Image 1 (cartoon, rainbow, N blue to C red):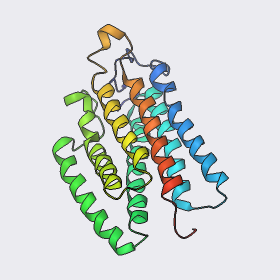
Image 2 (image 1 turned 45 degrees about the horizontal axis):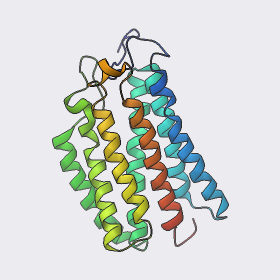
Image 3 (image 1 turned 135 degrees about the horizontal axis):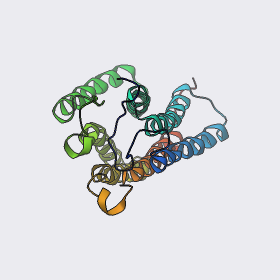
Image 4 (image 1 turned 135 degrees about the vertical axis):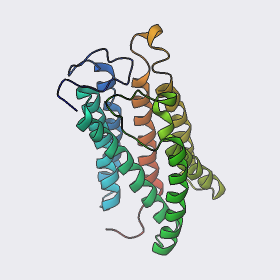
Length: 229
């Protein structure tokens, strides 16, 4: 990608430039707020656990990476946006499976393989590529299909908490519903551009910040590690 090239996927961006998507960029503060609130719970409980700290840091990294992408809108900033998102999803799923199985390593590995295989199949048919080439547009449903595996994983997680009447079920269910709504806002961004002038992508950031915050609170409050790291 040459220097003048930029990635134009969202309604708010109308030209190259560092501050052409101010609302999309600043709305990523929702992830920083979620990480800060989770950090307060983490620090207050008086015990330190590496996986909890890692997912909190990754939640903040999602906001920073997305801010960079909506500021620079180029290839390297797109990777800064994508990598923290999927790293957070992967580690959060692994940590929750580990703790829901009573920290049984072999049970965690078996379930994780099933989850990864299932998500991989869905991902193959819905996206196949989470990044955008120079000449490619946003794609079908504005590229939202790439997040279908994450939505399905979250819905399965929510269902499992209700089956087992887990105390985190309200948090996880609320997170799943909010993620579904946020996907809707991401999808209709370009469709609403003529009417709004700025689109709806910023709501994707705000609602996802709330969703991530709920998942972090569920993990810290109701899925603590049995053994301190």
